[in-house]
Image (tube, rainbow, N blue to C red; front, side, top):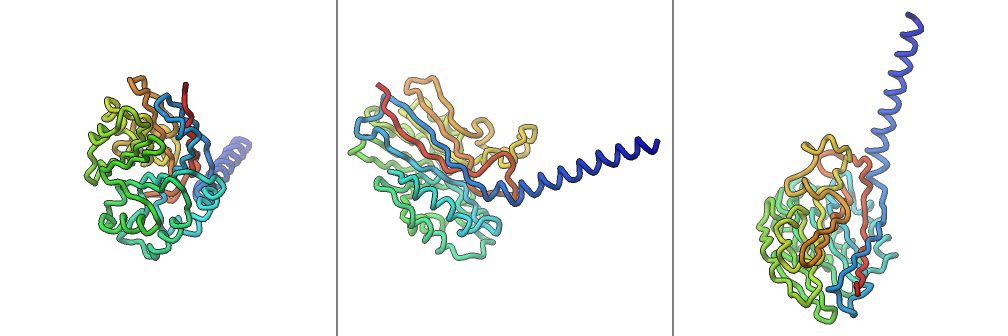
Length: 281
């Protein structure tokens, strides 16, 4: 009996220590990591001029007491080393704007350090509407040199590329049907914070959609999906998806940088994505 109690105690101690280590990792280590992921997008719709174009993608920074502009320096350094031609921010800049105590001007200053010859583009996420951010988000991003596309179309004619930004569909005024503005002779990139919108735009000339929103679950345990995954982010969670439609559309879901609700990340490392466009002959 004494031996059994000793074994149970040791098992309990092992579980306690393991749990403590996992907690510390998810709270203090993984949230401050950064992986740079290279993704190749091949398409016959791509022009010769746009071949090998490099797009840096990041989003869901959720600036807060748990993620600061100092933490963001790691992302800036990685983008600087990447030397992208274009930059895309997929939304959700500040976690809760109404309780954010720091200077938003400091965020704009950091964003302004990012250089991209063909432009820096951003869309609204649901947190960019919530908490009083609706009237401030656009000015913060524009002060950082980003063009905010709010149900808008932007063409880079010399590359034969169109960028179509869909506004947030959860709290905002998103109109997925604007994806129909894509020209059949251009490579059309649709930006939508919420990835599940892809199911509403596949009948249009969409070559690539770039999204965020899901945080790659943030705490990447699939049996919690009903509780973790947000609206419009329950079907396409993370990474690259291919679709068998006329345009052979592709979707990339970036798992984001910061955190919301809980200051933890587990098996969902913050990611900066480097998308390289390749012409398929």
